[in-house]
Image (cartoon, rainbow, N blue to C red; front, side, top):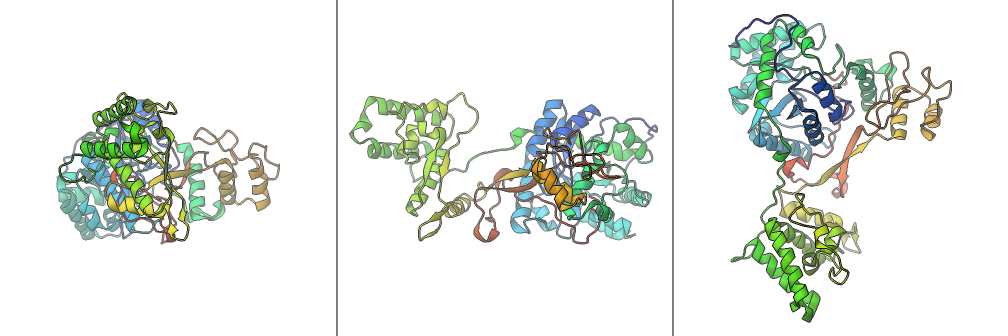
Amino acid sequence: MVPRTHHRLGAAPVGWCELHSHSAFSLRDGVSTPDALARRAAALGYPALALTDHDSLAGLVAHARACQAVGIRPIAGLELTLDDESHLTLLAHDRIGYRSLCLLVSHAHLSGDRAEPRTPLAVVAAYSAGLACLTGCRRGRVASALLQGDDAGAEKSVGALCAIFGAAHVWIEAQRSGLPDDGQLLHGLARLAQRTGLPLAATGNTHYAHAGDRDLQDVMTCIRQRVPLDQARPFLRPGRAWSLPTADEMARAFADLPDALRGAATLADRCAFDLAHIDAALPAFPVPAGHTAGSYLRRLVQDGATERYGSDAGTDHVRARLSHELGVIDVLGLADYFLIVWDIVRFARAEGILVQGRGSAVGSAVCYCLGITSVEPLAHHLLFARFLSPSRIDPPDIDLDLPSDRPGAGPGREAVIQYVLTRYAGHAALVANTVTFRARSAIRDVGLALGLAPAQIDALARDPERPAAPDVGAAGGLGVGTDGAPAARPLRPPGGAAAPPVATPRRHGYHGTPARGGRAPRTPGHGGTADRAVGQGRRRDGGPDQD
């Protein structure tokens, strides 16, 4: 049973921090950058901040860096959408929990609809190690059951979560949304906590850093739902402002449930994330019997030197250069890396696919002997240290140019991608890139959201810096900032909203070529790199998002 303790009305709960927040990487739902959220959290005195974007870890690195820059602890999290459209909030205790989040995200995006990733609870059970589970917002199974008066269903859902995560890692999530049935829901959650002996944890379900960002969130909702603002009321987030709350605001909101505030503080203390948790360990390359990765690499380089240099392979300057490079590779533990790149190049050439290494790798005699590059570095006085040196902590980067097609033989680049994803399954994935709002795209999307005429939108889009024509809007101008915030002259119709800031994430794409037919390779990515399209589409029931 949750202990009841006295709590002075208005007193700030010691250690409370937001454990359920969305950044702009919850595409077209959250609107603030991870940096803006972290700076606001630090200004409010938070000791930590969790980022729980929808089915995505795309903003996590930026979140960690931003939190470290302002002196608060980053917490890695995720709001997972289950296959029945319900939500579940997950937080990582440690490195193991972070890896579980990555596996869940990868499974969701690789096994379901690209735009609407969904995860069965059975999959959550398979990847639950190192995670803390909050029962979710109003769209969680527990809260939904209580709002329908189904206490038994809520308790059954809690039991299922306890069976997956263990009762010590399940928390009843409590939120005040500013809606008429808040009292009913919170009363039901408190009774459920007492019956099950599980702790409460109060969260704010933050979607933007400052209360003044609400207008921008409304515009993002219009863009997501593809409706103008004057028709968007059914889709707009109701109730209070969904900004980062102050500690005093939370104390007042949960004055009757102080244990929920203390529970959140306790849970935050149990969770931690560090960029070192992102483990980029390479797979071990399968080498012939009797060889290590290092010895096999040396043999391949010696054979390649004979082929490339001929009789000059035994000269002092060639031998000294190769010995130096192999020594550095050995010290840095990168023999497997070079063998993997050699293997990819070997496959491409065996399949008749043109391949060429470029970039600073052309300064490596080892790459030249392995056939990865075609420029002889000694004759051209190219420096190996520009490519790799013991003093560099970042891994090497070898770029391979591949044609999209083979004449008369089908796809080229895609064949290589599929080979890599299959041979190195579990360690390979496509790299996602984030497409952000630019000035013209922001103007066109927001213009449609605000119900402007096509001619007005075109006039603004042609010259974003030009003052708006008198008939465009009362405020004159459509503000599109360059620093992650709306510009000084936003277009605000009565009750309207500002424009999305430039550089706000708009959608996710691929750095590379997706499989033909629009299907991405079905290989889970290590470290969450297969976190692909994480956009939020229109809800299937057409109702407002309350997540």
